[in-house]
Each structure stands twice: as structure tokens, then as C-alpha cells.
Image (cartoon, rainbow, N blue to C red; front, side, top):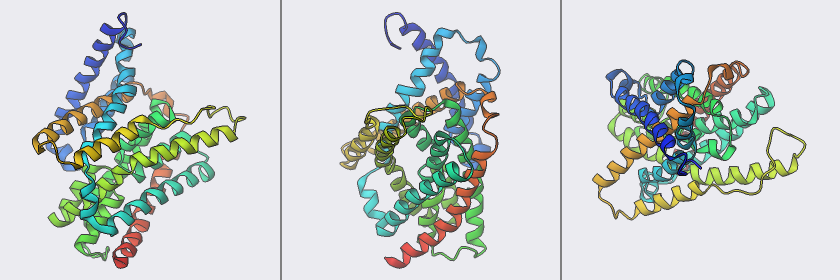
Length: 347
């Protein structure tokens, strides 16, 4: 146990060590260069963690590893629960039916397309495929973090998925406003906001691209993005049920564990917190503080994942995750555009 009498001091030391890196990532994210690119502290955290893992990790006392593992497991789950304070059910009503349709179709179709191309065409392993597809379909790094405990996958696979989110999410952030301003994207301002919120990877990417288009587009984009974020919970529950059925029907496949049905408690907690936040019982100032602390906890979890990621593990994977993420990138641009056009015309 991480906090048993014997391990408690080592776990605390490990947590403080991870927190130091997370604080550095938070500080670095405030630099104009990273803010301009929409790079969140979560992304910087995993990079710092990976740099450490492949340089000085051998100098860390082995006992402190308990704190790193605690960050990648328990702290991560707690942080996902409190991520619900970023959402309210009222926000769904504000954006209207078009935003709900776009969000639902994008999340569902992107994951299905990603899983098909990843496993059937590229012959990529299921865990990396699911993580990469989840990152593109829902909300980038946070979605990858939320999915990793359900899959019980290796840390380096999450790092791979996050790297694709950073690459193509950053490209999209600059590309979308350019395509809109040059008239390539024939969308009204509100529809452009739905398009951005429905297809861009990270919340930071959505904010940056939305503001580049206009204030009204930015507001709508963020709300639509939050609807996608809210879909983490049902997605994880469905994923857990699906994986359980898959395991039971493929007992001969040793790469998948034979497991009992396991509904992720943190997904239910996420919904409960979002529901509580919808009651507006806490002041905006208190919610902001909670969100800032939650972002730091997520940064710690991401940093810890980086610390568990040796660069040698990437060699066997090759460029297949990049190919998969590129396919989803193209799908989100064109598929997302026509889905947005369809939803806007429908309502």
C-alpha cells in the first residue's frame, strides 16, 4: 500500500518530487510562446517527465517510485472526477441541438474510424489504437488520461497518444482560422464555433482557434467542446463493458486480460460532480480555485506518466500511431465540416 506506515514517507517524497516537476511545467506554460501555441501544462509536464525518465531516472531512490505510481493511478482518477467542475448541464442547453448532434457524431464516428484503421489497416495494437482514437475524438490529453486506467495500458502508450494530440491539435489550431478567413470553410460564425469545438483536440486549442475567428465563435466553441468532454463518462462506461465482453469471447488472445465487468467509478464521479456544479451552489471564485488545483493534479499525473516512459519503448511502435492520428486529423477536418453543415441545416 502506498500510504502504509512503511511506505508513507517514500510515497510523500515521490509525490513532492512529481509536484516539483508539475510546478515547473505550470510555470513554463505561462511563457508567451507556449500560450500562443495553446500548449497546456499537461503537455509540458509529460515532456519534462519523459526527459527525466531518459536521463536521470536511475538517480531517483527506488522507494520514491511509490509516489510516481500513486500519481499515475489514484491521483489521476481523483483529478478526472473533479474535472467535472468545468461543466454544467445548463451549458448543453445554451449551445442547442446542433452542438449536441455534432459532438455526439464526432465522438462516436471518430472512435469507430480510428479503431477500424488502427487495428484492421495499420495492424496497430488495440491499446495504442484506443488511446489515440480517444484523444482525437473527445478531448485530447485529458481523454487519454481518463482512458488509460480502464485499459490498464503501459504508460508509454499514453505518451504516444498524447504526442499525436499535440502534433495535430496544434496544426488544426492554426489551420482552422486560416481556412475560415480565406473562405475555404463556408460556415457562419456560430457554425464555425460548433465546428471548432466539435473537432479540435485540446480545450486550449479550441480557445485559441475560436478567439482567432471571433469572440462569438469562441464562446460557442468552448461550450461544444465541454459537451464532448462530458461524453468521457458514458464513453468510459461503454468502453469498460465492451472490453469485458471482448475479453470473455477471446480467451485465447493472451494480450487481453480475462476480466470481470468493471464500471470505472471515476466516470460516475465525474458525472456526479458535473451535476453538483450545475446547481451553482459554489461561487465562481471557489470553482476557479478547484479547477486550478485540478489542472495541477492532472499535470502531476501526466508528468508521472512521462517519468514511466522510456524512449526505447517507442522503437517497436514506429510511425503507425502518427499515421492513425493523421487519418483522424483528415477525417475531423472534412467529416467534421460536413457534419456541422448537416446539423446546422437540420436545426
